[in-house]
Image 1 (cartoon, rainbow, N blue to C red):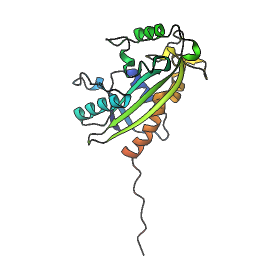
Image 2 (tube, one colour; image 1 turned 30 degrees about the vertical axis):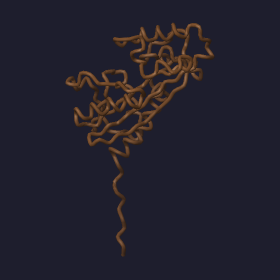
Image 3 (cartoon, one colour; image 1 turned 90 degrees about the horizontal axis):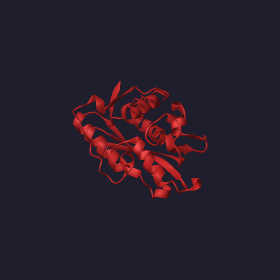
Image 4 (spheres, rainbow, N blue to C red; image 1 turned 180 degrees about the vertical axis):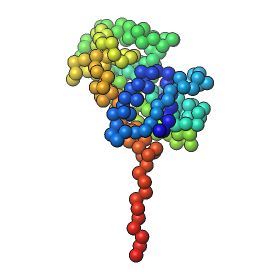
Length: 213
């Protein structure tokens, strides 16, 4: 079993990664740890201007502190009518401390006069994998949707109750977890990262070379 630390305290994210890993064929022998397993790491800096900057910043801090491969995601909601906000500030959109309910309320208030056809948005996820030897790798995923006029559904977390997918006529929070884990921005990024992990952590054995006769 290969240990990789997810640079997060959010157990919802950890469960999503675990579910996506179990769905791989063939299965990858990865055990996902979280910052809850490393209480000595109290706070991670994420002061970058982009999702990529923040993801790498978090992953490198954890990899250096623990000497174990670390993965971090920086995800956020990008709303066209708000010029890309909340973007990298998605988790703290309504200020400190982080609060999903207040974030959603602020988003709805800012969009209350915006018609449905102009409420296009997308979830973006950038994954960064930092290795103890200094190597770093990235994968990105995007999921397009629309901001609903009210929250719907009890599943997921964050902005999921407001993120409506017209193709399914449901919000992220209304979708079964197994479907969300196939179509989400995080799932898209993780599929690309799984490919990298297979190459990096579980390379194919060298082919047997026939000697020259």
